[in-house]
Amino acid sequence: MPQPDIRLKQGAVYALPNGSELVVGIGGRGGHYFLYLPLVWAGQGWVISMPVAYEVDGGGSVLTDEGRATGWCVEDLTDLHRTVERKS
Image 1 (cartoon, rainbow, N blue to C red):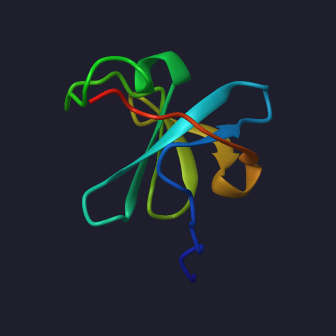
Image 2: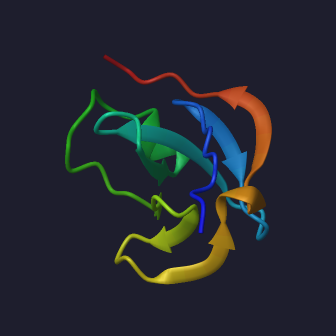
């Protein structure tokens, strides 16, 4: 089965089907995506332990912060065409 073409943008705001708005953080070499609540993302400077709301795995599934499947996939995320800057 081919891997999905995941093209989420760092700092961009996306909405889940339930209306939750989340900001994308890209980890590692660009192949791992984390979804943060906007207030967490815009908070103090980058800390590795910043609480993650969701994660997108390599297959495009959206997982909870505990690694459980949500039933959503990357295609379910709606780009809201906004970004949130990080404080340095």
